[in-house]
Length: 442
Image (cartoon, rainbow, N blue to C red; front, top):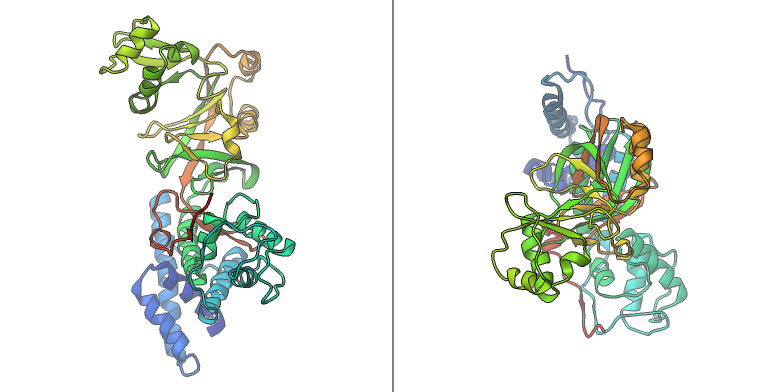
């Protein structure tokens, strides 16, 4: 027997409907929200009950779908409308953003140069006010038109919330986000919240999560976040896939068996330019019978312009593209988590740089967690850890779920909203958003 939903008052029902309207889950909620806004004082109890039933039906459908996928049962007996504190924080924020959109003008700003501390520009006043209404600047002074120290503090906070380099410079990316209206933000937050709530219903107590556009990794152990790290993900032309899998083994000092796509796109052009490339990067070359092949640098350069009938394996060591650790999980895309031989790339704010795999900045800490919690043969691990020339696979006592997700908006625990660029053009709200035109940027 299904328990009845608690009766929501109008002030609690309206943001629930607004969220579902903005998220676009069903045109019905657009009609319901217009009805709530247009005539809140004359709606009958029957009208409110009908609208609440629509909200409850959506969340019950989500719960039934999740229950069916996870356990094969369709039984749901408890109330399903989300009422938890994090969800209420999202409702509060999208309501605030919607109200801002109705009361604030948000014309597109165009700059003829980057703005830095001390400069004067007529757009400064508008930028200051936008930061103030968005919560990044406590106060602002009209008609100053000067980029002050106080404004720079607000810009850096704004840049932090958008995953940008916190340099206080108002350039193309910062201006892009300054131009996104509160309505655009509300829609992004609503859609990503629904996406995240659906996803979270299937989470195990322990898991590894990669948020691709945030370039961020989170390790959760029995419900507690124990490690966060920057990551590098695939370029837009070689996207990291969205998927769910399980990490089944860890490789210490891995060798790298080069995929044919990377060989063709990346390595052969390097060999054409430098016949010593393979020896300098510690590659062994094998024919398709598994026999090792040797050639002179000049011969390698000539062969790189042919169909190149060989396979490359990069030996373990400092030059190895996978670094010291590789975390293997089954997938059809030949991607995995690993270390990197180029740690300086983690200093970039846009880290869509790889050929699809995920490189982890705090890879040693992650490997240590696996060793302490899941690696079966800890003694062999300790014995081989100092060694850099021998690859060793380690079995795990149990598999760890790994999730590669694509979330471009969310609330932190403190209620602060964050947004990230749509690096793979998967969000139509951002793909079709107003552009940021900064002319003559040097």
